[in-house]
Amino acid sequence: MNNDTLQTIIQSRSKRKRRYIATMVILIVIALALCCAMLMLGNTIYPVKDVIAVLLGEEVKGASFAVGTLRFPRMLAGLLTGFAFGVGGYVFQTMLRNPLANPNVIGITAGSSAAAVFCIVVLQTSNTMISIASVVGGLLTVAIIYGFSRATSFSIGRLILIGIGIQAILNAFISYLMLIAKTHDLPTALRWLSGSLNGAKVETVMPLLILIVICTPILIYFSNHLEMLELGEQAATSLGVSTNRVRIILLITAVLVIALATATTGPIAFISFLAGPIARRIVGAGFSALIPSGLIGVILVLAADLIGQFAFEAHYPVGVITGIIGAPYLIYLLIKMNRKGDI
Amino acid sequence: MSHTLQTKNLHSGYDQNLILKDVSLSIPENKISIIIGSNGCGKSTLLKTMARLLKPTNGDVYLDNKSIYEIPSKKLARTVGLLPQSPIVPEGITVADLVGRGRFPHQSMFSSWSKKDYEAVATALDMMNIAEFSDRHIDELSGGQRQRVWIAMALAQQTNILFLDEPTTYLDITYQVEILDLLKDLNVKYGTTIVMVLHDINLSARYADYLFAVKDGQLIAEGSPNDIVTSELIKETFNLDCHVINDPISNTPLVLPISRYHK
Image (cartoon, rainbow over all chains, first blue to last red; front, side, top):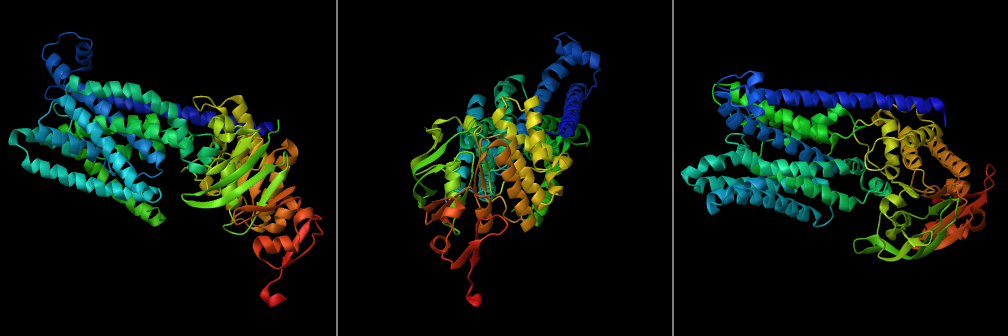
């Protein structure tokens, strides 16, 4: 072995590692800054001092209600769903080696939404039941898509096309449910169409917080297996990855996180689609983009919600803003992939 | 340390389509073995089944007399490596990072590189003469350079047995010889047992210590090239009329096909 080669690769990798850590720190700082902005901004702007006082449990006149009861749950919901959609989308896109193969495009969030709207409009069930139903709805959609795409022999292209078809059916079903919904159910049901942080409560985001705390270590543990899967089935197998087992664990974990996030705020459009590719581009291919994807998800959701709340005269739900950002990217990606012959 | 690999009554194939029928063989230790046969004869299926990419429908593959399905996959990957025919390049990855992925079976939970990992990657890069590209992106390299990167990844895995599925496909003759020379280096230097599928019968005869001839999913001949490559065997394996003469460069059999226009 040539010592120069060894030194070169050690230096270059540690340089990139430093860059990776720096990127991570910057993303965390931006996310935290947005969290602060979410707490400070509103009809009344409270200084950081008051916000911290409220978070520490002190009673501050006016601020305690606005920050503690209204803005904090909203911020928390945005933080958690952004992270969930970001990591979940990244897992799908990396595992299936295709940016189109994300829960948003292939109908998994639509499956969760449809189940939730059905519970609200038809069964009139409790919030807990709605959460459970949307998780089941998401898992069921994956099972159906996977089953159909395996019918002859498995292909990722077919999986995506079937997913898009299923998504169209589910969206039609949601529209139908909206039409037959009672007027007083409509506001609740409506947010399942585009996703919104309105009306978030600490109790309703707790299940998602717990799930993320459980699932993130699992995803981190398997993130290097995920990188091996990127090399293709055969290379991954010969490098010692039990591909089927790893795929199923990753798939179920990612779907759980995505589905419960959908149950919490509705399907915030395109986050699971955008976060992964952006994170990948920022950190490069040498390191895992899992956590960066989650952070990008947080940044996108919080920034979009701030824009939706304050940039225009009317208030727009976060999903409308992310939809406006995400749709052109989808078109761009389709054109690019079509040129390369990937679809 | 060298390991033994055997198959017993191996049957294998895709879906309901049985391709490999009753193959029992022993891979010679620390030698280069090459599997030859016509298109669709099952040579690639044989390689894939031995490397655990395809589950046998019947029979089994044994590493040191133990079924490879009883060995944990990561542990197996420290002894048996494979270079697939068309691995996928992750977008934007550098040469050193890709080669480093070959270290996966040696790494514990998190993929932070140990000193051993760096040394294995450096050794593999040097051996394949690609150290100068270590920081480059794979997409910037030529076909021959890329293939050396993939082989370097398999080398970084540091397995005693290495399978290669047509490692010289799509390469011009210069690169073909270069790749095979590098594999021979690996075999001589580390005693690595190499098993590969190769299309070129003459290069196979040059580089193989041992040949396996496959036809219709069955093993029809095995042995050293000088012992088994005859015009009869080529006729039987490839359905090709030929003369076999001595290759003056390597003193191995050289197959000269007889074409319809040149009788």
